[in-house]
Image (cartoon, rainbow, N blue to C red; front, side, top):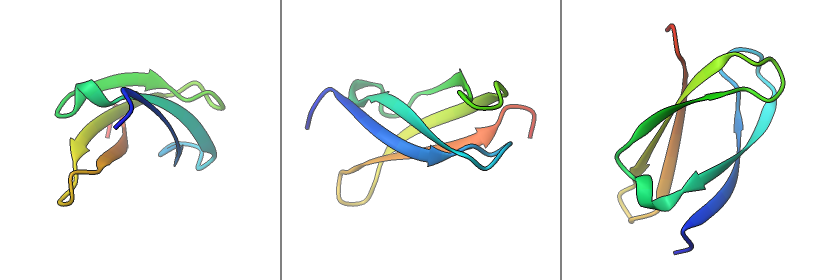
Length: 63
């Protein structure tokens, strides 16, 4: 698995597809990143799926 992966995901605020550069070494961590379209703060959580694949979850910071 590469250390960095680029993923597309939907912003929980504006619904637009955004591109994220994810650090695979941060599995189990969460951090805040602003949406590149609407600039709202998104909590990005990285975790390992059942088959060991990198999963990402985006939620509104003030949800």
